[in-house]
Length: 189
Image 1 (tube, rainbow, N blue to C red):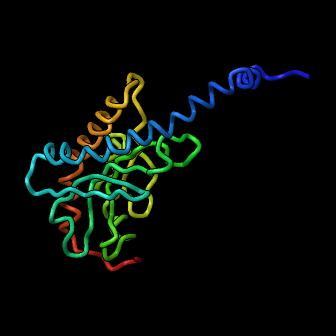
Image 2: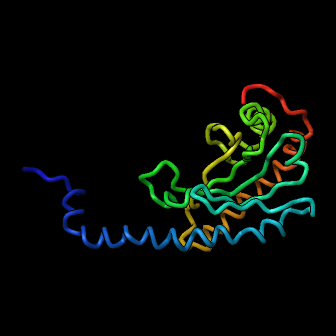
Image 3: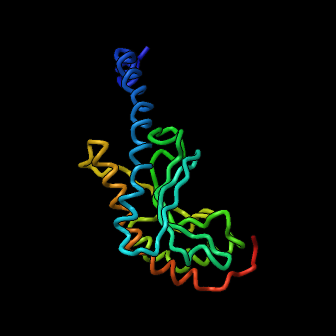
């Protein structure tokens, strides 16, 4: 019987491998508060006093910014840094990394139509800054943040997440201003 070398390696080192894999939970529990704690930095870097902090500590956690004008007249828009609280750092899940997104929130009066409008207005700029994930309802443009090759410390990764958010904010907030000025389409909900 021939045994694959990778399988043989695993069996020889399985105790150590499983011990190391268990550290993922420890890392997740350290990373979540570090991401949650970015709120003050996001506010300070916004470049305007017109913003408020968006925070949600649920399973689909997020921290981000919104302008007052993005929440009126049927719109509910924000730019967020988000993550799935239990899937974060787990490569076996569909959402192992934090992401930055334009988010159409639950108070939007026509979320599907508004997602389309926001995507149409922001897509070219979003793609140019790396937000290239396919559109999903409530997330017109978004993209994962995977650690850069030179990132080997958690604080570096948190700084990278902050930097990606800043780039998205600087690139997209005026486009979102334009979107939020439009009358809300009463198309498909």
